[in-house]
Amino acid sequence: MKLQAMLPLLFAAGLASAPAATIPFELLGKAGAGLLPGNENHVINGTPGSGGAIGAGISFDDVSRVLTINVGWGSGNGFTDLTGNATVAHIHGLTADGGTASFTQNAGVRYDLNTLPGWNPSAVNGVFTGTVTIAEGDVQALLDGRMYINVHTAANGPGEIRGNLVVVPEPGAGALALLGAAAFATGLVRRRR
Image (cartoon, rainbow, N blue to C red; front, side, top):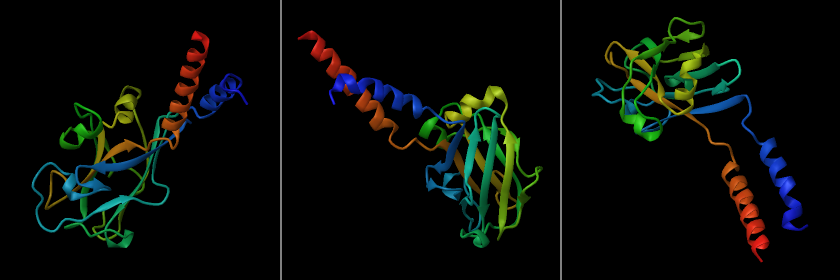
């Protein structure tokens, strides 16, 4: 099949791979993936715990603006125990920058998690499995990576474990864009002849 004949198929494939209404997220920070004490930007007291996404993980419905969060911490969830039961947990934002620059930035509380259904503060088997409706004005900041989840304890009032909310890149999206650009460029080269 000639490249020019493939262009409609390439464009149709691009439209078919347009972002779905459900966007997956991961937790990242300067110390790595998950809810980690090393992702915090202050001194941690005691032997801190760890956590991360569990079950169905974290996803955002860009139509309803509902962020579904399934995170856990402590040995009961396959991580390490916190220094004590969690006192509160929040989504913090909006950091000044997005992307990896946000990993070293702190921001105020934007959404409480500990007041919602699905909150279990246990140091050993803690979870938040629930939803938060993101304000319309915060959606772009969420997609830009300018928000993070922070779990606080008595020993670590500013936060014991943290993970920035980062969109999981679409698999193959870069390859499809390169293929489309190559096809377009080839078509231009052929027209010049």
